[in-house]
Amino acid sequence: MLEAEELRALDDFRFANRMPSRAAAVRELLRRGLGVGGGVIDAGAGASQSYGVLDGPRDSDNSKDRQDQG
Image (cartoon, rainbow, N blue to C red; front, side):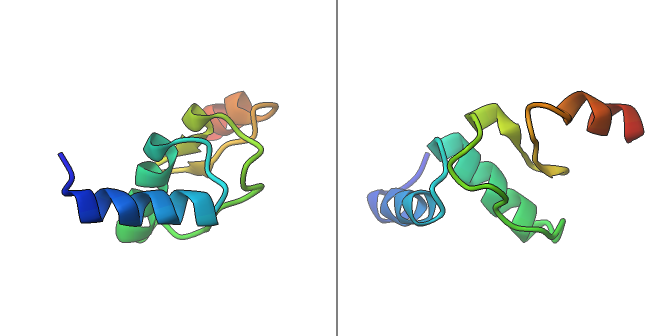
């Protein structure tokens, strides 16, 4: 559960980075907080599930390839 102010900050981050959903924004913030690195790649082009916590935004065409590699 988020406070109203936290939810506004999350939505501001989401819209500023053209993320498809709140869930995608939360996963991106978790990635950054965990120090996984990277950033929003191809903002606005992917589905919510395309944004992973540990491996970054996935391209729908090669997400299987990334899973096979790691």
